[in-house]
Length: 274
Image (cartoon, rainbow, N blue to C red):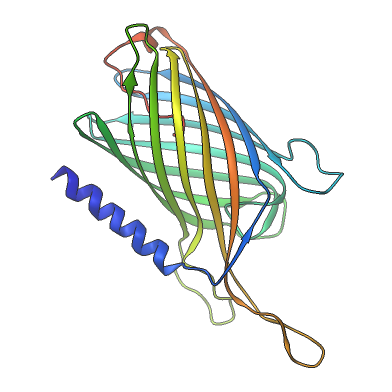
C-alpha cells in the first residue's frame, strides 16, 4: 500500500498542473537566494527551526538594493510515528516588487500555515508528501488575504561516504500552490486554478551531524489570467488569457543543528526545504 499512495498523490499534482496550462510564457531574471537555518531537535524526531533568507533579483534597475527580498521562518514539527507528522510554520516576507506567491505587489507579507506530512521508504529511497493550508496576509496595503493550499511531493536518498559522517542527499521536489476559492462573486475577475508552482532539484551535503549545506536550483511559476488590451482603433494590442511567469532561482541553504541529540544516529533529519 505504500507505492499506490504516492502514485495517487502524483496523479493529483499532474492533474492540477495540466488544468493550469498557460497560453503565454514570460521568463524573468534569475533570483539568488542564500539561506541560513538553525534546527533544534526535540524528543523523537520532533524539532524546532528558524530560517533567515535573502533574495537578490537580477534586474536592470539601478536603485534596486543587492538583496531586495528578506524572509524569516519559524516552525515546529511533531512526529506521531515513522510515517506521519504535523507542524506549523510562520513565514514573514519583505519584498520590494511582486511576490512570487501572489499576483499582487506587497511590501510586507505574513503567511501562517499548518501542514501534515507522510513519509514512506522503498529500500533506501524516501518518498514524502506534504499537504499544507495557509493564509496569505498582506500587512501594509488595503487588500484582503487569501487562503492557500499546497501539496509538495519529494523523493531523495542519502548516500553515506565513509565512516566520518559525510553524506550526499540528492533530491527532487515538485509543489503546486492553489488559492482556496470558496465562492467567486459575479463581479470578481476570473483567476487561474494554480497561483504558484515550483520544481526543485538539489544535492544536500552533510559534513557532520551538526552542519550541512544544500545548493539547489528551481523553476518557480506564477500564474495569472490577463485581460486583452486594445489600440485606439479597436485592434488587439496584447492578447489576454492565461499567462505564466517563470522565475529561475538558485539557492544555497546552510544549516546548523544544535542540542545534545544532534548526534543521535537514530534520528531522521528532513532536507533543508522543510
